[in-house]
Image (cartoon, rainbow, N blue to C red):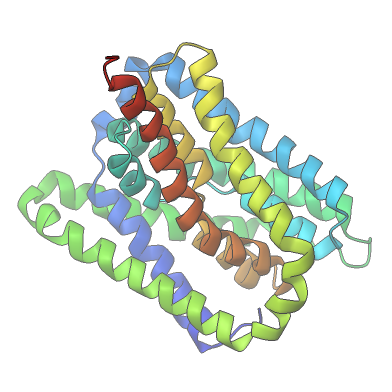
Amino acid sequence: MEQSLATELFLPIALGIIMLGLGLSLTIDDFKRVARYPKAMSVALLCQMVLLPVICFGLVITSGLNPALAVGLMLLSASPGGATANLYSHLSRGDVALNISLTAINSVLTLFTLPLIVNFSLEYFMDSGQYVPMQFKKVVEVFAIVLIPVTIGMILKAKAPKFAVIMDKPVKIASALILVIIIVSVTIKERQLLVDYFGSLGLPVLLFNVLSMAAGYFIPRLLNIEKKQAIAIGMEIGIHNGTLAIYIALSVLNNSAMSIPPGIYSLIMFFTAAIFGYLVNLRTAKSAVPNV
């Protein structure tokens, strides 16, 4: 996926608007909530920061992806949960407050863990001549484009709560529309490239998505974390911020092939997340039916 007007102009804007929308829904209490849900937060963060990269690395090794695609998928695994997870969690009767807190914490922590995982992946999968580590300047750039809009949104939420409530929905709609425009424009422009890669990349991406949501749901349940929180964690871990991953691939690493796994994942996850939400609630509905 080469840089185009859509990606070069709208991608940073889309990412900024998405993070602004996240900020409009956040308060300081969301960060303090970590102390209220220590077990759920700890399990979710361990799954997000440690387990997902390990699962992704195993899939990449066993599927034999070419180096650029391997790094692209690892980049995705290191990206935080997306704001869309909050919506899907709400529709699936998950703990949305936990989702918001996780998204906030993940977005901050991954600014430090993401460069480590990406640089490890670049060094492991790329030849020495192709290995270009994330420069400190670029890390700061990503830090700014993520945290500044979130901070502005939080300030608006605190200082002008009525305005924040009014703007919350339009900002979410705008970010979704811009993201759709980017994905559609890139898909049309690089349709042949996507077709060529989908055969080798489609199954690993789908497996990573399904395993992410499954791990995010079943591991907390095995540890006796309540179902609402498990659904929230499953959505948080299964729905990544693909926009951030695409932005880093194109604008930071300057490698179009690395943006293909996040692009395909961003399309797949909307359907798999809906199916996941339906299935976990189907089990609840069945258990609620009285025996006659």
